[in-house]
Length: 412
Ligand code: GLA
Figure 1 (cartoon, rainbow, N blue to C red):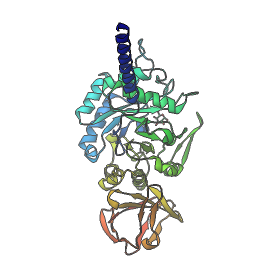
Figure 2 (cartoon, helix red, strand yellow; figure 1 turned 120 degrees about the vertical axis):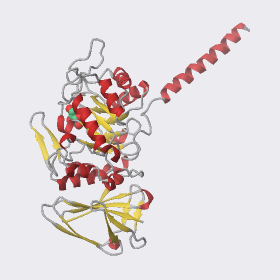
Figure 3 (cartoon, rainbow, N blue to C red; figure 1 turned 90 degrees about the vertical axis):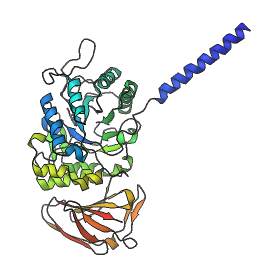
Figure 4 (tube, rainbow, N blue to C red; figure 1 turned 30 degrees about the vertical axis):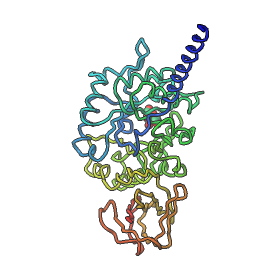
Protein backbone atom coordinates (compact mmCIF):
# COMPACT_ATOMS: atom_id res chain seq x y z
CA UNK A 1 0.00 0.00 0.00
CA UNK A 2 2.80 2.38 0.97
CA UNK A 3 4.45 1.60 -2.33
CA UNK A 4 1.17 2.38 -4.11
CA UNK A 5 0.81 5.78 -2.28
CA UNK A 6 4.34 6.59 -3.22
CA UNK A 7 3.66 5.90 -6.89
CA UNK A 8 0.53 8.11 -6.82
CA UNK A 9 2.50 10.97 -5.22
CA UNK A 10 5.27 10.61 -7.80
CA UNK A 11 2.70 10.64 -10.60
CA UNK A 12 1.04 13.81 -9.21
CA UNK A 13 4.44 15.48 -8.77
CA UNK A 14 5.42 14.71 -12.34
CA UNK A 15 2.11 16.20 -13.56
CA UNK A 16 2.87 19.39 -11.63
CA UNK A 17 6.36 19.53 -13.13
CA UNK A 18 4.96 18.97 -16.61
CA UNK A 19 2.37 21.68 -16.06
CA UNK A 20 5.05 24.13 -14.91
CA UNK A 21 7.31 23.29 -17.82
CA UNK A 22 4.42 23.75 -20.18
CA UNK A 23 3.48 27.14 -18.74
CA UNK A 24 7.08 28.20 -19.17
CA UNK A 25 7.09 27.20 -22.82
CA UNK A 26 3.78 28.94 -23.44
CA UNK A 27 5.30 32.10 -22.01
CA UNK A 28 7.60 32.33 -25.03
CA UNK A 29 6.87 34.64 -27.93
CA UNK A 30 6.68 38.41 -28.03
CA UNK A 31 4.55 40.58 -25.79
CA UNK A 32 1.38 40.77 -27.85
CA UNK A 33 -0.56 43.94 -28.56
CA UNK A 34 2.16 46.53 -27.85
CA UNK A 35 2.05 48.04 -31.36
CA UNK A 36 -1.45 47.68 -32.76
CA UNK A 37 -0.79 50.78 -34.89
CA UNK A 38 2.69 51.65 -36.26
CA UNK A 39 4.92 52.95 -33.43
CA UNK A 40 5.62 56.71 -33.47
CA UNK A 41 8.53 58.47 -31.86
CA UNK A 42 12.08 59.74 -32.26
CA UNK A 43 15.42 57.96 -32.64
CA UNK A 44 18.83 59.56 -32.17
CA UNK A 45 20.80 57.86 -34.96
CA UNK A 46 20.00 59.72 -38.20
CA UNK A 47 21.19 63.08 -36.89
CA UNK A 48 23.42 62.40 -33.92
CA UNK A 49 24.93 58.95 -34.51
CA UNK A 50 26.91 58.24 -31.31
CA UNK A 51 27.02 61.91 -30.18
CA UNK A 52 24.21 61.50 -27.68
CA UNK A 53 23.83 62.49 -24.04
CA UNK A 54 21.23 63.09 -21.37
CA UNK A 55 20.87 66.81 -22.19
CA UNK A 56 19.89 65.95 -25.77
CA UNK A 57 17.35 63.37 -24.61
CA UNK A 58 15.76 65.70 -22.05
CA UNK A 59 15.53 68.57 -24.54
CA UNK A 60 14.06 66.26 -27.17
CA UNK A 61 11.47 64.97 -24.71
CA UNK A 62 10.59 68.54 -23.65
CA UNK A 63 10.16 69.64 -27.28
CA UNK A 64 8.14 66.53 -28.14
CA UNK A 65 5.61 67.67 -25.57
CA UNK A 66 5.78 71.48 -26.01
CA UNK A 67 5.44 71.44 -29.83
CA UNK A 68 2.40 69.17 -29.84
CA UNK A 69 4.29 66.22 -31.31
CA UNK A 70 3.35 64.08 -28.33
CA UNK A 71 -0.29 65.11 -28.72
CA UNK A 72 -0.04 64.13 -32.41
CA UNK A 73 1.00 60.61 -31.36
CA UNK A 74 4.81 60.59 -31.09
CA UNK A 75 5.64 58.92 -27.81
CA UNK A 76 8.83 56.80 -28.01
CA UNK A 77 12.25 58.38 -27.44
CA UNK A 78 14.79 55.80 -28.58
CA UNK A 79 18.52 56.06 -27.92
CA UNK A 80 20.34 54.28 -30.71
CA UNK A 81 23.97 53.10 -30.81
CA UNK A 82 26.52 54.82 -28.58
CA UNK A 83 24.77 54.94 -25.20
CA UNK A 84 27.09 52.38 -23.59
CA UNK A 85 30.60 52.43 -22.21
CA UNK A 86 33.06 50.47 -24.34
CA UNK A 87 33.23 47.54 -21.88
CA UNK A 88 30.80 45.59 -19.70
CA UNK A 89 31.47 45.73 -15.92
CA UNK A 90 33.19 42.92 -13.99
CA UNK A 91 29.86 41.08 -13.65
CA UNK A 92 29.13 41.25 -17.36
CA UNK A 93 26.51 43.99 -17.04
CA UNK A 94 26.11 46.68 -19.69
CA UNK A 95 27.22 50.10 -18.46
CA UNK A 96 25.59 53.31 -19.71
CA UNK A 97 28.42 55.72 -20.58
CA UNK A 98 28.87 57.77 -17.37
CA UNK A 99 30.31 60.75 -19.29
CA UNK A 100 27.26 60.98 -21.57
CA UNK A 101 24.71 60.06 -18.88
CA UNK A 102 26.13 61.38 -15.58
CA UNK A 103 22.77 61.12 -13.79
CA UNK A 104 22.44 57.47 -14.80
CA UNK A 105 20.14 55.83 -17.32
CA UNK A 106 17.37 55.06 -14.83
CA UNK A 107 17.04 58.76 -13.93
CA UNK A 108 16.77 59.58 -17.64
CA UNK A 109 14.12 56.92 -18.23
CA UNK A 110 12.20 58.34 -15.25
CA UNK A 111 12.50 61.85 -16.71
CA UNK A 112 11.07 60.73 -20.05
CA UNK A 113 8.30 58.75 -18.34
CA UNK A 114 7.55 61.83 -16.23
CA UNK A 115 6.75 63.66 -19.47
CA UNK A 116 4.18 61.00 -20.32
CA UNK A 117 6.51 59.50 -22.96
CA UNK A 118 8.15 56.10 -23.43
CA UNK A 119 11.82 55.20 -23.60
CA UNK A 120 13.80 52.88 -25.86
CA UNK A 121 17.35 51.59 -26.14
CA UNK A 122 19.43 49.86 -28.79
CA UNK A 123 21.70 46.85 -28.93
CA UNK A 124 22.85 44.24 -31.38
CA UNK A 125 22.48 40.47 -31.76
CA UNK A 126 26.21 40.23 -32.50
CA UNK A 127 29.31 40.42 -30.37
CA UNK A 128 29.54 44.19 -30.84
CA UNK A 129 27.15 46.89 -32.02
CA UNK A 130 27.70 48.47 -35.42
CA UNK A 131 29.61 51.34 -33.75
CA UNK A 132 31.76 48.94 -31.71
CA UNK A 133 30.04 48.91 -28.31
CA UNK A 134 29.32 45.67 -26.36
CA UNK A 135 26.83 43.48 -28.25
CA UNK A 136 24.35 41.15 -26.60
CA UNK A 137 25.52 37.80 -28.06
CA UNK A 138 25.73 35.41 -25.08
CA UNK A 139 24.22 37.97 -22.64
CA UNK A 140 20.62 37.95 -23.86
CA UNK A 141 18.90 37.12 -20.55
CA UNK A 142 21.23 39.31 -18.49
CA UNK A 143 20.69 42.30 -20.81
CA UNK A 144 16.93 41.74 -20.88
CA UNK A 145 16.89 41.84 -17.06
CA UNK A 146 18.89 45.06 -17.19
CA UNK A 147 16.41 46.68 -19.61
CA UNK A 148 13.50 45.54 -17.44
CA UNK A 149 15.19 47.01 -14.35
CA UNK A 150 15.56 50.35 -16.18
CA UNK A 151 11.85 50.11 -17.07
CA UNK A 152 12.40 50.82 -20.76
CA UNK A 153 9.57 50.30 -23.23
CA UNK A 154 11.26 49.61 -26.59
CA UNK A 155 14.35 47.73 -27.77
CA UNK A 156 15.86 48.12 -31.23
CA UNK A 157 18.00 45.06 -31.88
CA UNK A 158 20.53 45.36 -34.70
CA UNK A 159 22.46 42.84 -36.79
CA UNK A 160 26.17 43.83 -36.91
CA UNK A 161 29.00 41.41 -36.04
CA UNK A 162 26.78 38.35 -36.33
CA UNK A 163 28.94 36.13 -38.56
CA UNK A 164 27.74 32.53 -38.35
CA UNK A 165 24.60 33.31 -36.32
CA UNK A 166 21.15 32.14 -37.40
CA UNK A 167 18.90 35.20 -37.58
CA UNK A 168 15.51 33.68 -36.60
CA UNK A 169 17.18 31.92 -33.66
CA UNK A 170 19.10 34.99 -32.49
CA UNK A 171 15.99 37.19 -32.56
CA UNK A 172 13.83 34.48 -30.94
CA UNK A 173 16.37 34.16 -28.12
CA UNK A 174 16.22 37.88 -27.37
CA UNK A 175 12.46 37.89 -27.66
CA UNK A 176 12.27 35.04 -25.14
CA UNK A 177 14.73 36.82 -22.87
CA UNK A 178 12.57 39.96 -22.86
CA UNK A 179 9.47 37.88 -22.18
CA UNK A 180 11.20 36.08 -19.33
CA UNK A 181 12.43 39.37 -17.82
CA UNK A 182 8.75 40.21 -17.60
CA UNK A 183 8.51 43.87 -18.64
CA UNK A 184 6.43 44.51 -21.79
CA UNK A 185 8.97 45.97 -24.23
CA UNK A 186 8.28 46.62 -27.92
CA UNK A 187 10.81 44.49 -29.81
CA UNK A 188 12.10 46.15 -32.98
CA UNK A 189 14.09 43.79 -35.22
CA UNK A 190 16.76 45.64 -37.18
CA UNK A 191 18.08 42.93 -39.46
CA UNK A 192 17.92 45.00 -42.67
CA UNK A 193 15.81 42.39 -44.47
CA UNK A 194 18.83 40.14 -45.14
CA UNK A 195 17.09 36.99 -43.88
CA UNK A 196 13.50 38.00 -44.74
CA UNK A 197 12.34 38.76 -41.17
CA UNK A 198 8.81 39.33 -42.52
CA UNK A 199 8.60 35.54 -42.98
CA UNK A 200 9.50 34.62 -39.39
CA UNK A 201 9.31 37.80 -37.31
CA UNK A 202 5.63 37.90 -36.41
CA UNK A 203 5.71 35.72 -33.27
CA UNK A 204 9.04 37.28 -32.23
CA UNK A 205 8.78 41.03 -32.67
CA UNK A 206 6.44 43.97 -33.19
CA UNK A 207 8.27 45.49 -36.18
CA UNK A 208 11.21 44.70 -38.45
CA UNK A 209 13.46 46.71 -40.68
CA UNK A 210 13.18 45.63 -44.30
CA UNK A 211 16.20 47.39 -45.83
CA UNK A 212 19.63 48.84 -45.25
CA UNK A 213 19.89 52.35 -43.82
CA UNK A 214 17.97 55.31 -45.14
CA UNK A 215 19.75 58.39 -46.55
CA UNK A 216 18.26 61.92 -46.76
CA UNK A 217 17.65 62.06 -50.51
CA UNK A 218 14.72 61.36 -52.80
CA UNK A 219 16.03 58.49 -54.86
CA UNK A 220 19.80 58.16 -54.54
CA UNK A 221 22.10 55.38 -53.48
CA UNK A 222 24.86 56.63 -51.18
CA UNK A 223 27.82 54.27 -51.22
CA UNK A 224 30.04 54.10 -48.11
CA UNK A 225 33.51 53.27 -49.43
CA UNK A 226 34.65 52.23 -45.97
CA UNK A 227 32.88 48.96 -45.27
CA UNK A 228 31.51 48.81 -48.83
CA UNK A 229 27.81 49.28 -48.10
CA UNK A 230 25.02 51.57 -49.29
CA UNK A 231 22.39 53.80 -47.71
CA UNK A 232 19.24 54.49 -49.67
CA UNK A 233 17.09 57.42 -50.65
CA UNK A 234 13.56 56.99 -49.34
CA UNK A 235 12.02 56.15 -52.73
CA UNK A 236 14.63 53.42 -53.19
CA UNK A 237 13.44 51.79 -49.96
CA UNK A 238 9.81 52.17 -51.02
CA UNK A 239 10.56 50.38 -54.29
CA UNK A 240 12.76 47.71 -52.75
CA UNK A 241 10.09 46.03 -50.66
CA UNK A 242 6.75 47.03 -52.05
CA UNK A 243 5.91 43.37 -52.61
CA UNK A 244 5.97 42.21 -49.00
CA UNK A 245 2.91 44.15 -47.88
CA UNK A 246 0.90 41.07 -46.97
CA UNK A 247 3.38 40.35 -44.14
CA UNK A 248 2.69 43.67 -42.42
CA UNK A 249 -0.18 44.48 -40.07
CA UNK A 250 -1.20 45.32 -36.52
CA UNK A 251 1.59 44.37 -34.07
CA UNK A 252 3.90 43.11 -36.87
CA UNK A 253 4.98 46.02 -39.07
CA UNK A 254 7.32 46.31 -42.02
CA UNK A 255 9.65 49.09 -40.84
CA UNK A 256 10.86 51.34 -43.69
CA UNK A 257 13.44 52.95 -41.31
CA UNK A 258 13.62 56.09 -39.22
CA UNK A 259 12.51 59.17 -41.12
CA UNK A 260 14.78 61.81 -42.66
CA UNK A 261 12.12 64.55 -42.58
CA UNK A 262 13.90 67.80 -41.62
CA UNK A 263 17.33 66.38 -42.42
CA UNK A 264 18.24 68.34 -45.56
CA UNK A 265 15.80 67.44 -48.34
CA UNK A 266 13.40 70.07 -49.71
CA UNK A 267 10.10 70.57 -47.90
CA UNK A 268 8.36 69.04 -50.93
CA UNK A 269 10.49 65.90 -50.70
CA UNK A 270 9.97 65.74 -46.93
CA UNK A 271 6.23 65.93 -47.51
CA UNK A 272 6.44 63.09 -50.06
CA UNK A 273 8.63 61.03 -47.72
CA UNK A 274 6.14 61.48 -44.87
CA UNK A 275 3.27 60.64 -47.22
CA UNK A 276 4.87 57.38 -48.30
CA UNK A 277 5.64 56.31 -44.72
CA UNK A 278 1.98 57.01 -43.95
CA UNK A 279 0.68 55.17 -47.03
CA UNK A 280 2.91 52.18 -46.26
CA UNK A 281 1.87 51.99 -42.58
CA UNK A 282 5.54 52.24 -41.64
CA UNK A 283 6.52 53.17 -38.09
CA UNK A 284 6.83 56.97 -37.89
CA UNK A 285 10.10 57.45 -36.05
CA UNK A 286 11.46 60.96 -36.59
CA UNK A 287 15.22 61.29 -36.91
CA UNK A 288 15.76 65.05 -37.00
CA UNK A 289 17.13 67.52 -34.44
CA UNK A 290 14.02 68.82 -32.69
CA UNK A 291 15.99 71.75 -31.25
CA UNK A 292 16.50 73.14 -34.75
CA UNK A 293 13.19 72.07 -36.28
CA UNK A 294 11.63 74.54 -38.75
CA UNK A 295 7.92 75.20 -38.57
CA UNK A 296 7.54 73.56 -42.00
CA UNK A 297 9.16 70.35 -40.71
CA UNK A 298 6.97 70.40 -37.61
CA UNK A 299 3.88 70.92 -39.76
CA UNK A 300 4.79 67.91 -41.92
CA UNK A 301 5.52 65.63 -38.98
CA UNK A 302 2.32 66.58 -37.16
CA UNK A 303 -0.12 66.59 -40.08
CA UNK A 304 -3.17 65.02 -38.47
CA UNK A 305 -4.80 63.72 -41.64
CA UNK A 306 -1.66 61.93 -42.82
CA UNK A 307 -0.99 60.53 -39.35
CA UNK A 308 -4.57 59.19 -39.36
CA UNK A 309 -3.81 57.38 -42.65
CA UNK A 310 -0.68 55.87 -41.08
CA UNK A 311 -2.44 54.94 -37.84
CA UNK A 312 -5.59 53.62 -39.49
CA UNK A 313 -6.68 50.65 -37.41
CA UNK A 314 -7.08 48.32 -40.38
CA UNK A 315 -3.28 48.47 -40.47
CA UNK A 316 -2.83 47.70 -44.17
CA UNK A 317 0.32 48.66 -46.06
CA UNK A 318 -0.63 50.53 -49.25
CA UNK A 319 0.44 49.44 -52.72
CA UNK A 320 1.37 50.92 -56.07
CA UNK A 321 -1.76 50.92 -58.21
CA UNK A 322 -0.32 52.38 -61.40
CA UNK A 323 2.57 54.26 -62.93
CA UNK A 324 2.39 56.38 -66.04
CA UNK A 325 5.07 58.72 -67.36
CA UNK A 326 6.65 59.04 -63.95
CA UNK A 327 3.44 59.69 -62.03
CA UNK A 328 2.73 56.90 -59.57
CA UNK A 329 -0.60 56.23 -57.91
CA UNK A 330 -0.46 54.58 -54.49
CA UNK A 331 -3.56 53.36 -52.66
CA UNK A 332 -4.28 52.22 -49.12
CA UNK A 333 -7.56 50.72 -47.95
CA UNK A 334 -8.80 52.27 -44.72
CA UNK A 335 -11.13 51.23 -41.96
CA UNK A 336 -14.82 51.85 -42.77
CA UNK A 337 -14.47 51.26 -46.50
CA UNK A 338 -12.58 54.51 -47.17
CA UNK A 339 -9.35 54.79 -49.17
CA UNK A 340 -6.25 56.96 -49.21
CA UNK A 341 -4.82 57.69 -52.67
CA UNK A 342 -1.47 59.36 -53.31
CA UNK A 343 -0.37 60.76 -56.69
CA UNK A 344 3.41 61.03 -56.71
CA UNK A 345 5.53 62.78 -59.32
CA UNK A 346 8.84 60.93 -59.63
CA UNK A 347 10.13 63.13 -62.47
CA UNK A 348 12.25 66.29 -62.48
CA UNK A 349 9.51 68.47 -63.98
CA UNK A 350 5.84 69.32 -63.36
CA UNK A 351 3.10 66.94 -64.50
CA UNK A 352 -0.63 67.06 -65.10
CA UNK A 353 -2.99 64.54 -63.54
CA UNK A 354 -6.26 63.60 -65.21
CA UNK A 355 -7.54 60.54 -63.37
CA UNK A 356 -10.74 58.91 -64.58
CA UNK A 357 -12.13 57.03 -61.57
CA UNK A 358 -14.59 55.00 -63.65
CA UNK A 359 -11.80 53.54 -65.75
CA UNK A 360 -9.73 52.71 -62.68
CA UNK A 361 -11.53 50.35 -60.32
CA UNK A 362 -9.20 49.43 -57.45
CA UNK A 363 -8.62 45.86 -56.30
CA UNK A 364 -6.45 44.95 -53.36
CA UNK A 365 -5.75 41.32 -54.15
CA UNK A 366 -3.66 40.69 -51.00
CA UNK A 367 -6.34 41.81 -48.55
CA UNK A 368 -9.54 41.46 -50.61
CA UNK A 369 -10.78 45.06 -50.73
CA UNK A 370 -12.16 46.75 -53.80
CA UNK A 371 -13.56 50.08 -54.92
CA UNK A 372 -15.57 50.16 -58.12
CA UNK A 373 -16.29 53.80 -58.94
CA UNK A 374 -19.01 52.80 -61.36
CA UNK A 375 -20.97 51.38 -58.43
CA UNK A 376 -19.94 53.61 -55.53
CA UNK A 377 -19.37 57.36 -55.53
CA UNK A 378 -16.90 58.65 -52.95
CA UNK A 379 -16.50 62.17 -51.63
CA UNK A 380 -12.93 63.42 -52.03
CA UNK A 381 -10.86 65.29 -49.45
CA UNK A 382 -7.43 66.61 -50.33
CA UNK A 383 -5.40 65.88 -47.22
CA UNK A 384 -2.33 68.17 -47.41
CA UNK A 385 -4.48 71.08 -48.60
CA UNK A 386 -7.20 70.15 -46.10
CA UNK A 387 -10.02 70.90 -48.53
CA UNK A 388 -12.97 69.19 -50.17
CA UNK A 389 -12.28 68.21 -53.80
CA UNK A 390 -15.60 67.05 -55.24
CA UNK A 391 -16.50 63.41 -55.80
CA UNK A 392 -15.40 60.46 -57.90
CA UNK A 393 -18.16 61.23 -60.42
CA UNK A 394 -15.76 63.51 -62.29
CA UNK A 395 -12.13 62.99 -63.28
CA UNK A 396 -9.59 64.26 -60.76
CA UNK A 397 -7.58 66.96 -62.53
CA UNK A 398 -4.56 68.68 -60.99
CA UNK A 399 -1.02 69.93 -61.56
CA UNK A 400 1.70 68.25 -59.58
CA UNK A 401 5.22 69.63 -59.08
CA UNK A 402 8.41 67.58 -59.36
CA UNK A 403 8.88 65.14 -56.44
CA UNK A 404 5.59 66.35 -54.98
CA UNK A 405 2.57 64.42 -53.88
CA UNK A 406 -1.20 64.96 -53.76
CA UNK A 407 -3.03 62.82 -51.23
CA UNK A 408 -6.74 62.21 -51.37
CA UNK A 409 -9.05 60.52 -48.94
CA UNK A 410 -12.02 58.85 -50.60
CA UNK A 411 -14.94 58.88 -48.21
CA UNK A 412 -17.93 56.58 -48.68
C1 GLA B 1 22.78 50.07 -38.32
C2 GLA B 1 21.29 50.34 -38.26
C3 GLA B 1 21.06 51.84 -38.07
C4 GLA B 1 21.73 52.29 -36.78
C5 GLA B 1 23.21 51.93 -36.81
C6 GLA B 1 23.89 52.17 -35.47
O1 GLA B 1 23.37 50.64 -39.45
O2 GLA B 1 20.66 49.89 -39.43
O3 GLA B 1 19.69 52.13 -38.04
O4 GLA B 1 21.10 51.67 -35.69
O5 GLA B 1 23.42 50.58 -37.15
O6 GLA B 1 25.24 51.82 -35.47
